[in-house]
Length: 230
Image (cartoon, rainbow, N blue to C red; front, side):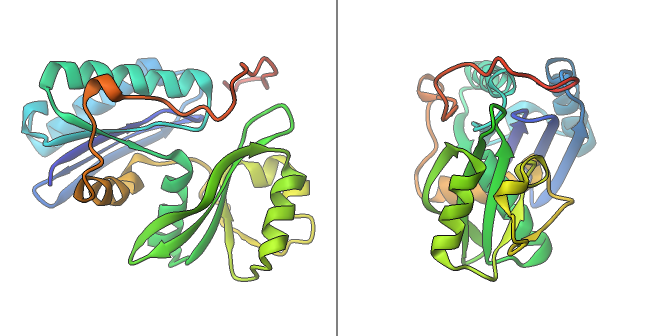
């Protein structure tokens, strides 16, 4: 199964290509440079694999949640590529991507993913390992860190780990240090969306270009921005 996936929903920008069983990927932390970097990164992985876009079977993208601008960039780029190729598309959660990375790198079975959503809130979700692929428990939400902490505490989960920028941004998310935080996993990475995309394709969840939808979770635009960040 040959898949090209792009991800631009946070400060990081990444591309992953799975072709004939080989994986080629690029990952950069480059705030506010996604629109300049994403197309060159796509070209670079295609050249490294010595293939063209027509050789890919499916396209994928990080559909959010995350930065409004970043999510729109990935959505727009993938729409253009899908229109040009006719390929079907898989939309992958940014939160699930971080949970999947925790599973593949640290064998984590229970993962709480939290991305700083600004305005004293986090994008938050809980995932469990299901035969090597992380599955959502409950819903993805945007909520204050204290409410996310209350959800974790209500589950009395002492073996879970945390990933994402939310844990560093808000002490209230893990006040008792009850969860182990995997500090290296701050941002979603397209490389770890491949397993999730494969599972969705097997389950018949690939969509046409006209059905592509970003996921913001929050309806209102976040006007409060931090220096150097989207």
